[in-house]
Structures are given as structure tokens and as C-alpha cells.
Amino acid sequence: MLSKKLELIFKNTMDRKTRISLDDPREDLTEVEITSAMNNIITQNIFETTGGDLVSIAGARIITTQIQDFSV
Amino acid sequence: MAVNTILKSSKVKLELQNGLDENGKEIIKSKTLSSVKTDATDEGIYDSMVSITGLQQLPLTAVKRIDEKEIEMV
Image (cartoon, rainbow over all chains, first blue to last red; front, side, top):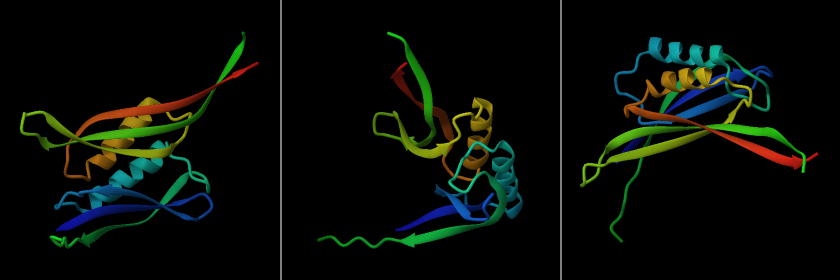
């Protein structure tokens, strides 16, 4: 079984990376959509981190994990 | 007795619909994001959650704000 997570990676005021991880990303995501959602998070500015506000986009990626179950 | 109430922390809980069970009842998958600013507006929280859940497959059914308040004696 494959499980996918979308990681949105931001930089905070202290230039440190911080991420928001989301389950089951849509299969048809575009870079434009991801950028737009991340920019909105930065604009709304509702999150606090130990290194200050989220100020810029540092990247986004999908992480796929393969899980193999044994019938033991 | 006089008390003071201080808003200590805020979190947001997202509820996504993950299909229906055998009785036709919605199965809810929830995710909590901590480190929300205590002074964040409800509009800001809602708007941010619509943005991020728009990237996910499951439809958003509810956004819940969890505020923790400490009550102390003055």
C-alpha cells in the first residue's frame, strides 16, 4: 500500500525551515495551485513558530511511503 | 473571588470526510494543527484551512478552533 503526504515548507523570520504536512494530496496538483495556497498561508499569517512568522516559500514536495503488511 | 482569564494557546482542528460507513454515516478524518497564534482571527484561520485542504483529496467538512484559557486568581 502506498501512502502520500504533501509537505509545504516555509522559511520563518529567523530563516529556518518549518513544514506543514498534509495527507492524501490530490493527484492533479499544479505548482501554481501549491504556490497560491502557500502564499495565502503567508498572507493570513496565523501560525507562530519558535523562529517567528512564516515569511517565504522554501519548497513543496510529495513523500510517498510504501507499506508492506505481512499476515503474521 | 476575582479571577483573570488568559488565552494561553490556540489550535485548529480540520475535519475531512473520508467516505461513509456501513450505516451511511460520514467517516471523519481529523487533523490538528497546533501553533496557531492566539490573536489569529477566525476569518484568517478559516481562509488558511480552505487553502491547504484544497490541496488534499478529501473534502473539508468543518474547521474547529480550540482555544485554551487559563483561569487564575487575581
